[in-house]
Amino acid sequence: MDFTIRAATLEDCKEIYRMTLELAEHEKVSDQIKITQRDLEQDGFSKNPFFHGIIAEVPEHLKSRDGHTKVGYSLYFYSYSSWKGRGVYMEDLYVMPEFRGKGIGKALMAKVSQLGLAAGCTQLNLTVLDWNKSSVEFYLKQGCWDVTSELGYHCLRCEGKALQQLAQGEL
Ligand SMILES: CC(C)(COP(=O)(O)OP(=O)(O)OC[C@H]1O[C@@H](n2cnc3c(N)ncnc32)[C@H](O)[C@@H]1OP(=O)(O)O)[C@@H](O)C(=O)NCCC(=O)NCCS
Image 1: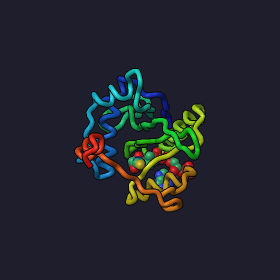
Image 2: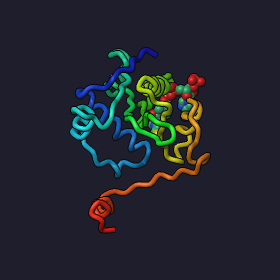
Image 3: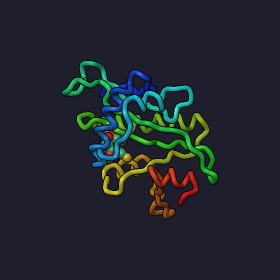
Image 4: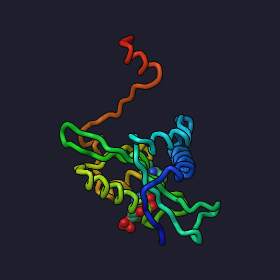
């Protein structure tokens, strides 16, 4: 299929936001979404961005049934491991349902890997929900291994009031 992968720009935030909502719906976590398009614009495209993005785009004649030419995206940022050094963390990977199975997901992931390697990273990290078996299969096929089952990692988070209290020494 004819598609291109390119760096996301500020003007892409509306479509990235739309796709983040679609991804959240797919992952059954729509109620967890707290950010807005404006947050994406500020956090990804200001002087010291918190994330980077790439977009998969198809030509106008291949647009989706509802008129979209931006049909997939990935958000990523750089991280650091005291064991392994520089890493790239892929936060989101999404391809619209009607464009799946055409090599776009693989191409997006390859691009994040290329950018990571170019920045001196030795690893690509990501998290996937345990019930999302088809995506787990996809990632294993792309050469990933399961850090949770192999090393016993658990993801932890502190947020909201607990984070405030932690910061204030109130816990
Ligand atoms: C996961 C996802 C990004 C894959 O994108 P895609 O464009 O459909 O995948 P591709 O067409 O690039 O497939 C690449 C390869 O993976 C294989 N593949 C794709 N989906 C697969 C799946 N669910 N299970 C196993 N293999 C899969 C393809 O057969 C292809 O194999 P090949 O290289 O031997 O031909 C896409 O299905 C998606 O957006 N899913 C919903 C969102 C999601 O769950 N994202 C992950 C959140 S952590």
